[in-house]
Image 1 (spheres, rainbow, N blue to C red):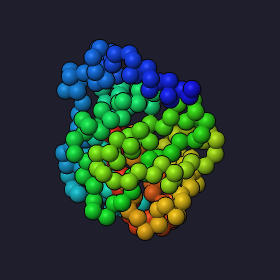
Image 2: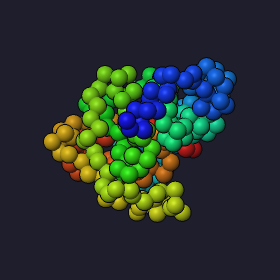
Image 3: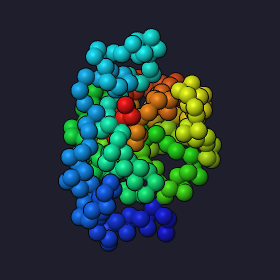
Length: 228
């Protein structure tokens, strides 16, 4: 039995506890839900950072390969705790909960396919799964779009850690060439990329470049949280 299957069975048997405060009864309790800050308000439609104009100065000067990014919550407090518990704690049910609590996910009419950001194989085995894939499955169910976790893959067994990067330029350098896409699955199709959190946009940007180079017509992105 794999770790992911074992943890899913444990979730079914044991009572749920809040990912943020530990209170029993639900994966995110009512008190913590009230503290989760939606990533809403005036924001740049490309990078989804707070902005008084539709496209911020950075995105005007250096356009992103991601056409539009949207996110459920600001990466702080209970939302941050939920994302980290999904990523490292293997509580798969949190993916559906985060997608549900984020409300309606607006998808452009030219988007055909939901694709999660892949993680290196050894990291996936250690965690018992890929948090982005769990989120992508929940997004596909909610939107009715097709999900294909094999359309984009991560090169290498482990891969460098972006957390070790000291700047945005370092993060971009670390993920350069990190992905490979299957042209037979993405060519001529609009793709919605899914990840747990967006910070520097380096990972999403590199994945989008790879998909576009393999024939995708457009790439949008959705993450459970956005680091402001």
